[in-house]
Length: 519
Image (cartoon, rainbow, N blue to C red; front, top):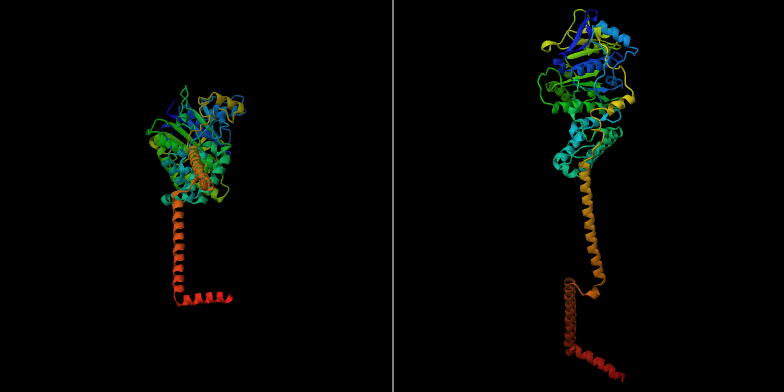
């Protein structure tokens, strides 16, 4: 153990050691360069060096060729002689082949231990970024999370989020009065995005058991830090999922780890490969979040190293916080390339022996312009450096070897079985089932009442009359008979009066006369 890690030789004849001081390793860093210039080997030797000093490492295996860290290099390798020659040239007298304690991870659970988090832990901001939602859709997603909190509906996996969005859509009218407009079309758009994410394998990311950050920070029995390798070759087919997951992990480290000030060495070093995927099309709020995390997480003892092709891929506010730099060759084929090359050169501390811009253009494979923080955190003078050869195997291990490592892993069996405990989906389904059961009982009661009523109507002449209806009919019948009687009596009285009068007598005489005349 020492207070620095050896990365290569610089200066005249490349004999001057280029060391990265562990005390300043949590001040973050940048590894940049065009494709094929040696970034992967630099990543590998940095991971080896941190591990050897007892610092756990997390990195992504984007191309599938970094898994060799788990296996020692071999003298039978075709590069063995070249490695020995370079080690001698840069004064790397301690060079030897060695494997490093490695833990493999995979979001899909195929090439490593499954990596999961819950929907609630990822939060609406990152999920909105993952789904590429509009501002209105992101607002509805925030409403769904608020409803989840208020009603005690845990959001653990994708089906929980899908279920609560259905509930939000069904109760849109009530929610709109409280939170603002909830459009059915926006809810539907979010559901379609979730379907696409599910088809891409994103559902594997969400669930339990969720990743415990302490499992990324383990130290082996011999004092070396574990090298955590995320299999990302398949994951890169969904670049936004890849970037969002790594950003979530970085945010979790920032939120969960305690403050440690300025430790003698980092608690964890985090390598963010293909860093441009994080910032492409990212809203300002997200970039500000990354900038805040990068600025503050170093006090948690975490060093973050961005790996990308061009330094211009990283926003300036974040680039200014990356104190340790390894710049491999940049190719300047266009005016834009030349401008980027010039800007990259201007970020280094001048070296009177050479022009930095020319050096960045001319360095060969396995060579870089380096600058590491020195005492009191001052940027070191830029130096052309030959990167040291790796001690572990250069290139990937076989599938059989990977499977063997997984079986003997200290975390074997901890994450392989998915848990599905009671959460929003199950709770809302239980509510729905209960409501359906209540509705069915209500219908049965109404049907029973209707049947009894029909039976009564069919049999009322045998079973008597109801009080209300019979009394009503009796009163109506009596009133009708009374009216008929009064009308008859009036007619009789009028006829009697007429018949007893003059006109009546004439009528009687006429009738009687006619009768007698007939005789």
